Amino acid sequence: MKVFRLAAVLGLTVALAGFVAAAEPLVSGPQVDSKVPGAFQPFNVNGESAGQKNCLVCQNGTNPVVMIFAREVTPEVTKLIKRVDQATAKHQDAEMGSFVVFCNDDKALQDQLKNMARDQDLKHLVLSTWDDATGPKKYRVNKDADVTVVLYTGMVVKANHAFQKGELSDKDVDGIVGEVSKILPPK
Image (tube, rainbow, N blue to C red):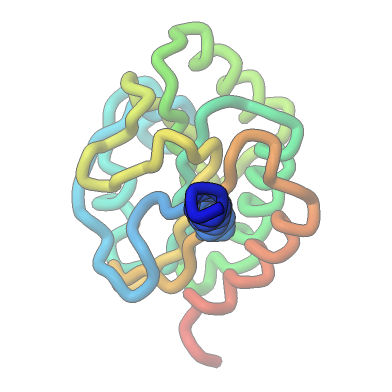
């Protein structure tokens, strides 16, 4: 009987530990109230430095920025990119910037991103690639995060969202775009 109770307690403990671990949010990238880790140079597909490596963190300086790390192009990521480009255009008076770093070593991705920039008529958001799926080390992009969105201003993170593969929804895109106000200067 004691062995049965011990097994039941151990089983319950393991089940609860699994539940607690599953309930914890995915942590990826620099977190709220932390400093942006600094310079890194992804390959820029569009924008002022198209066709070369350029530090987009440096280019944007202390301005308000939406920085996205993604693994692949999906319809949801494309919606997010389009909406962030529109928000960036709307807030040019605040010198807002935005960019996406695709952490993926697929060489065909650059052509795909050039087509996306053209097809989505991206005017302000810069698409770039990082030749390693782990992303820039000091940014700590979680290997389980398919999309990581960081909103920052003054080089301080104001919002962070991380999504596993297939989790990013239209509602999430709306929420992220709604949080742009967190990085804009007061009116």
